[in-house]
Length: 357
Image (cartoon, rainbow, N blue to C red; front, side):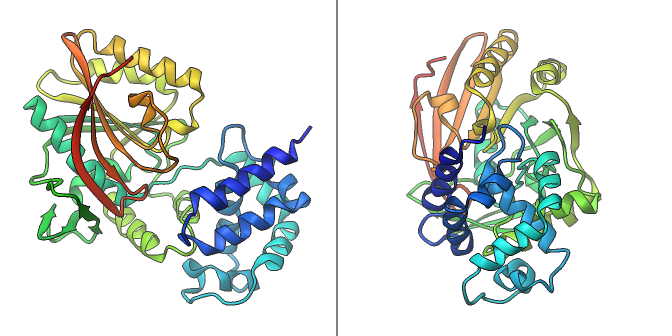
């Protein structure tokens, strides 16, 4: 039996927490409308277990709407119309959902939320540099939940942190702006990488147009800058995609760690994916990492659901960046920075903590 109260609460939370302070007015308005609409809640309930319900419904509509840009609802989507919207979108959204009900259900039952926020690389870059500096070795990068793997090739992008702080190839067509806050410089050089791998239940192929359209549909329609950055990164990565492996992280990760050459530092990382794990899965992942680190050092970088390392709850979508160092001789935890969940700013201020695994 569908629990409509729980579904409604999810959409209220999305409007009040996940799109705060006018970050996406369209989705804030629509989320509140869906929360009070029995038919739309029932439609949204068809998403796969464990998938964020609001993201899935809005992504499905965005995906379909991009294929019929003459629909009246499309005028409210800046990523489609290219113009600032006007008027009330709620009735148009409802009519579109009900008239495309079966197509939306098909998407909800077959796809997953697999955002690949390129600007998060501005936060990952200094974290990877920190890992390489501490280890004195180049990196073997292994991403959990890489989606299309756009963050795995962070070193192909150009970065501008403001205040004269820059990094990356100056001729890159991907230019990432991220405001450096605080007093410490987040990065001074590009860390060397000898291997880059990703593990995903359903990796997305940058050379598959349909899969890239789904990735674009997960971008919030008010965020045209994010879409432009995504398109630029897709074009860069298509030239030489990283290796993405489809399968279960618990089955694949131990072997990938063990096979990494001793001349490199294994750096496992995850950005806003561990929130989709159950607590049992998170506990299993901690034990897997500790077991892998019994014979060699493993670094773990986490952005989003940072309590995986800190073991302390934090504000939703705070975007703290944490580093755990695991090895035969001990373990440690460092909160490297606080950062915007989409990477729009970073406050680099490393602080050591006890790792309580």
